[in-house]
Amino acid sequence: MARDFSNVAIQVGIDLSEIKGRLLEDEVQIMDDHADRMRTATKEHWTGWRYQGVSAKARGNSGRAWRSKVQATEGTRGIILENRARGFYGKKPYAAFVHRAGTKATGSEEWRTVLKLLIDDHLPALKADLTASILRNLSEPRAPKRVRENKSIGFTTLNLVG
Image (cartoon, rainbow, N blue to C red; front, side, top):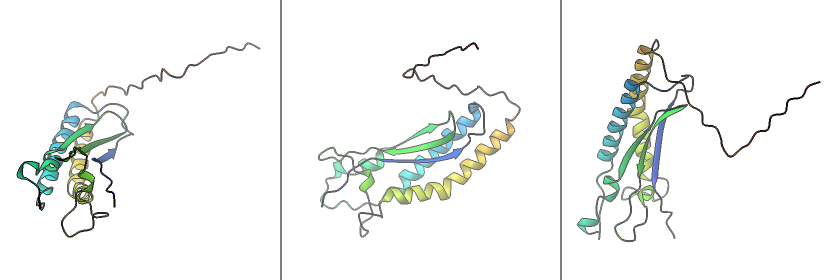
């Protein structure tokens, strides 16, 4: 049976589309701090693997590969955790396939437990901290959202005089 090898990208977010402007510096800092905590918690959870027949230098690639990004500009603000680990032999992505020994390879992939950990243990604190900061900053001016013009679509304006 062929395995579906792929990367992992987990995004947790908060819909803040009601905010008509960009997040302020301290609000973005909250997002950055929570991204660091989420990445650390994910790495701590992503341990305890059985490495039967795998050399010591080929172990731990997927644990070291976790990275975080913050999307804090518009709409749904979020934290994205990515794992683009490549196998030591063959250099193929495999993080989406990682699962605990004794579990089925499909349906019990470890990224699913990471997602649950983030939603249950980290998202409520992110929402609370970010909401508190936004409420403190209600009177502060916000830079407006900048919507880019889609250069690939041309418009023709017709002025009709009747």
